[in-house]
Length: 283
Length: 283
Ligand SMILES: Nc1ncnc2c1ncn2[C@@H]1O[C@H](COP(=O)(O)OP(=O)(O)OP(=O)(O)O)[C@@H](O)[C@H]1O
Ligand SMILES: Nc1ncnc2c1ncn2[C@@H]1O[C@H](COP(=O)(O)OP(=O)(O)OP(=O)(O)O)[C@@H](O)[C@H]1O
Ligand SMILES: [Mg+2]
Ligand SMILES: [Mg+2]
Image 1 (cartoon, each protein chain N blue to C red):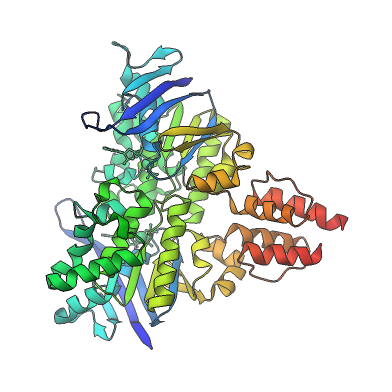
Image 2: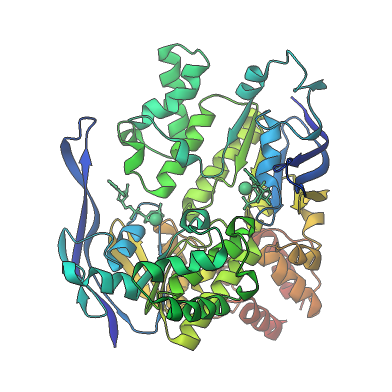
């Protein structure tokens, strides 16, 4: 499945004297199976943008195409699209409402018309995928810690078996191990099952390590659309946009300035280690 | 001088079934004993559900001990008559800045807390001005809080708390929703309040980098305190931290990995500058 945004713009206060663009003239295509990071300062338009992808928001102008078809044309089966594009909202735990966790995660499959048996099978698999064990099945979502709730909410979307998984800051508030577990699972779903991923994040480290491509938003405008290595070359520009580069990338930039012969596009601790060891061995 | 004294604190949440019948309890804090020095900057780390928020809520009497005692500025949280003194002395900031905005105009929002505790109007203006100045938001006095960025909203939240003139600032993941610059802003402000005004800070976070400049780092697990020391001591124990589902800042991780390969580096490197200097001396 391929999703294309064509010159989309969005204005929340269209009746106001001075309408403000939350998203302005953004175009890009998500290819099948791609792992894309979406970063940008708070209020840059990320959450607005991702809601176009499953047709939840209709752009004020521009088009959203799924495999070439305009999803806002009359008669387009939006319901079908929403099964294929799984959107996990920012702070999804606000949407938990069933009396126990198993029921909550079954909700999506139930809505899709799955048999009770299949609902349970999908729900249990999804709950395991987010790293919660069986003892959670009967717990009430309201008695969980922040991070536990987040996992349940993600499981709810995974249970629907989407082709593209859109995650709006899925790891904010998760502990480091939980962050890695969820992102490892997402990466595995991407690599092994070919599920496309859009990951909205404020963690430069996470997008640097995991994604194939990064979109950078600023003030509603798409500033960069490039590989992680190319995007994180722009240290000063990103800082001016309220962003940053990963700490290891920054360390390597500084070592280079001090005469170390290492590449400037290092993204992970493992890469940095290797390059530094090479330099130290030579000297 | 001790400003917070926690003695053998146990907290149990009661669990109810669908008919609101009590069916059991969850022990969220298990015999916690801890005292904090006035003017110290303390960071609390720990996995999701380990009891951090529960602990923080005991420090401004939002929760009361199942067993044990909590003293804040000498007041016992279980003395009903002292609850307002405690809430005035220990101000709390939560994760989501949107949830704590109450006014239509920034200054109204900041005045809300002090108004509630009966600060007279003439004093109020001064307090609000002072608080806004301390967080660098004077220029936004008459703006609508809804039009501010996440980092700015969080600053307004902090100003509202400062207007209460607390001695202790409790922050429960105040940066989880913010972009990298917003995160730096909030951290800088609390460090300044700690240094210049001598305020005691208790900061709960899942960002390890935010613990680097603390006086003291506390690691919790399963409702208990497992580690307690300076950032350098704590972050030298990488394996132990990983056991508790935590990690170390990327710079510390890189140094640790290099050390394992035989590179002669000191333990517990915490900043880019330290690592770069150590590597340059080997180069
Ligand atoms: N329901 C709404 N009504 C009016 N304005 C809105 C609404 N939702 C968002 N906005 C505005 O649109 C702009 C883009 O918001 P959006 O939520 O898409 O940003 P974001 O990049 O997701 O930010 P964050 O990182 O804080 O989640 C912001 O200026 C925001 O204030
Ligand atoms: N209202 C409640 N009723 C029952 N159990 C609860 C309640 N609130 C929290 N708990 C449980 O108490 C434990 C501690 O929760 P707490 O919110 O203090 O964790 P935390 O360390 O702040 O986690 P997080 O990092 O996810 O915010 C968890 O196991 C949680 O499930
Ligand atoms: Mg958002
Ligand atoms: Mg918490």
